[in-house]
Length: 148
Image: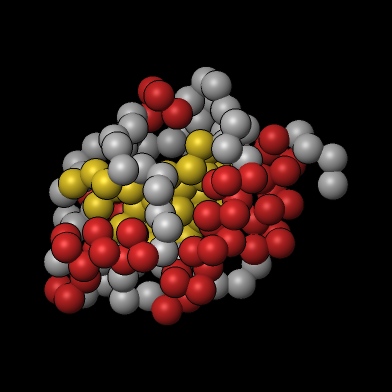
């Protein structure tokens, strides 16, 4: 995805964990962080506490949605995905993308990957990889118009 592109529809989930959300529910009120991860991704597991911290700290200011993007056949087991979500305190709505429908809509190739959309649903920041959480927080703060 390119900066300022509109958020794709959140359609085609194999399953939703922790409740389902639509693009329409996310746009308009507040910015959104969409976070791609996978059960087989070590960097994803390391980043989870920081994502959860962002989710909790900005609870009233930011929507947070996670997307489970399988990287291999081993990543398709729903009970393993559910257990990892539970074990890593992923309480936000989670789109299980076993068929890569949303992954393709986002043109995403990485886990972890982070997409920050403004309240109008336009992409304002993208980053991938396990490091750079300070940069992610900085970009979220900028979209939220919080002084840094």
